[in-house]
Length: 438
Image (cartoon, rainbow, N blue to C red; front, side, top):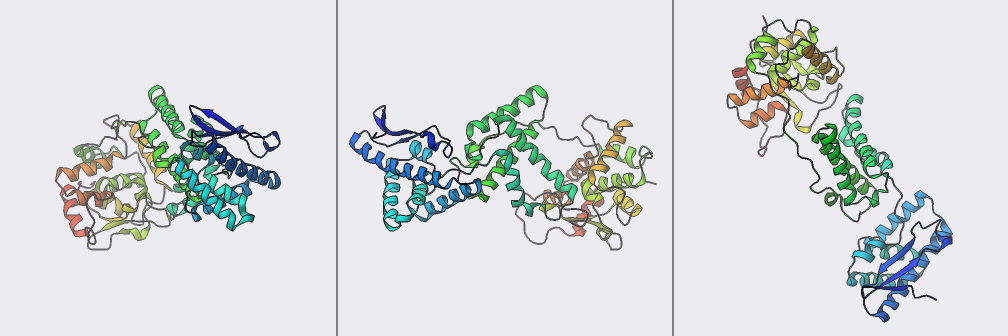
């Protein structure tokens, strides 16, 4: 019988081709395992142990011919058994190429001791400690079905439209990853693949005019999906996801939307007649946005009980409700109504009902602004009113914490107490309020 030994650069390896009758169950062409020794006698002993483990594994494969589900179960069992014996599960290829001689010896000794105690479980123990369990065959194209049910908590309170807006970029990201590297088994994804994805996007940015920010979102989404799926399947990849995606980012040039000048908003949008061609709800939205800085979807999502005109300080309460959830945890807030915003809220005291989503309202208003040449700069859009609101608060030197609260941003400082009360926010907003339409 062959001792299945080969020598390379003075070190011995266990090397054996996968027999033809085993190929239907084991797709590898051959098995090569470093024996971590230059001594031939020691190498022979270690090769015998490896060969016995491999043959037991093959016999088990041929006898059981597991289905995909059974194969996944065998793999998870191997991971758990390895932990029970004080080891992290490592694939046999990873062990042969990267494990120290000391770790190999420890694993083999642990295997021998476990087999003596559980002679009937030799195959399972070998799979766990020597790494011969076959990986689950999960392709990149299949991870969405595993990922989506595991992140349901992120979408609580969101409408169907909001859920679609959240899902679509993530589905697109994994499809782009597949275009760049192929539909690989998730355990075969390596650093070279991630670098290839980076280069794929770099080419699109430099030659097709795509935005670097879109590339960076793709990187974040794929990273998150792989991380969640590995955790869900209790799989420990050879290289952790953080390392795979370390420093993978394209440089983003600041292309944020430009703000309008406050004087322009007052003269053209509020005091002038430029918006007369818009329907009343659209005009009311512009007025409310101008003096609250709220996001479009936050305004269209207001319910009757969220528009409080019957209190000493009129305000809107931005929160999750039957019309939809919030963009972030920090988005919930109460904003006093002053100036143009108070005027707009009184136009529709029960909230806006014409638009089912912020996207629809944005599209209508932005189209009107473009067609009527109402954007002084190329970077202007309806969302620029939000930037204008923030600029005006900074111009009067409002505290950053107050600005963050009004904008629905996470405060950069530590959070203490209940936050800013309406009276405090009203004091600052009165200083910047636009004069309402006449």
